[in-house]
Image 1: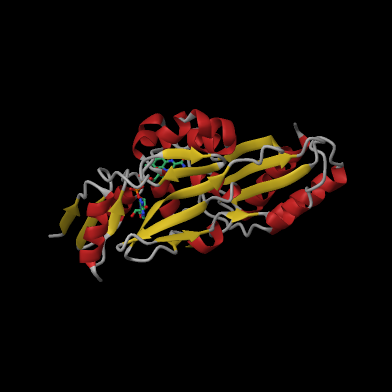
Image 2: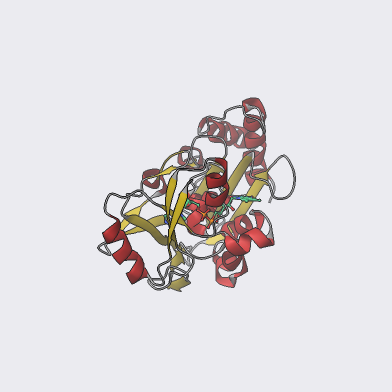
Amino acid sequence: MSRVEMHIPHSMEELLALLGRMGERPYRYIAGGTDVLLELRRKPEADQVLINLYKVSGWGFREISHEGRSWWIGAGVTIGQLAADTGIAANFPVLHQAALHLASPQIRNLATVGGNACTASPSGDVACALVALDAVAVAIDAQGKRRRMRHDAFYLGPRKTALRSDECLLGFELEAADPSLKIVRSQYAKVGTRMSMECSVVSLASHLLADEKGCLRSCGVAIGAVAPTIRRTDDACRMLEGKIMGGISEQDVLAFADAVAACASPISDLRASAWYRDRVLRNLATDMISTH
Ligand SMILES: Cc1cc2nc3c(=O)[nH]c(=O)nc-3n(C[C@H](O)[C@H](O)[C@H](O)COP(=O)(O)OP(=O)(O)OC[C@H]3O[C@@H](n4cnc5c(N)ncnc54)[C@H](O)[C@@H]3O)c2cc1C
């Protein structure tokens, strides 16, 4: 019979002390449990050691805060909390929309930002918006030492992150727009096989900033469910810089959509064919800059 050993630290200090004692013993974290519990039910393991993060507080783990333009979102923040935060909605509309696109209110009340990121699914909604915003993942180890990783260092493959066995994701750092720039588009577009309770077949998160003349100066675009990991489309975005939103020629729009598609490597699976994913991605990229 399989045995589950559950640890429930009540503070960040207790969690770090526990990590120090775990040594080489394998364990899994459980935050909201909306991914990990399904996974364990599908593939039960003989003996399982779980560290439940539900009661961990302190060190900003459950907080959304900011100092000037520097924002912090703790890994233990729930998707519901993120969706309800007015500062997030005003400064990062793409993240607000991604939170509202994730599952149902019941799931959002349990599911956490850290769980969405650490599951490392190519179709993670909040994770995709965080990549578009160039958020930096901050891990903490048993000694309390922090390690910062951009998305390309953090996501190693499907369901695989760079977190070491003695680390926990503490949260994300992100920058709000420079006051000399304004947000001209910040949007999360998600296409699934049905409208609700569905992971995306293709998603595109965009956060575009322009100067006072309306010229695009900073463009963050991430694509989901079209590659083994969520990807940023920086090469395609460079084509937009200096252009005026709403005044981009048809030829440039098509060239941009081609460049976004070149950042993807879609596969065919139960939910959609690679051909369909490629078409939808091009349409989302085209819509992103041609309708305003
Ligand atoms: C019905 C249903 C619908 C869903 N719909 C969507 C959807 O539309 N979009 C979407 O993106 N997802 C969806 N999901 C997936 C899931 O809800 C999200 O990925 C959620 O954000 C996971 O968060 P959690 O706190 O529940 O993670 P958990 O299940 O607790 O953990 C997920 C993984 O992250 C690890 N982990 C959690 N926290 C940390 C941490 N701080 N440090 C290190 N590792 C950590 C765990 O060990 C585990 O491997 C759905 C799930 C269900 C059941």
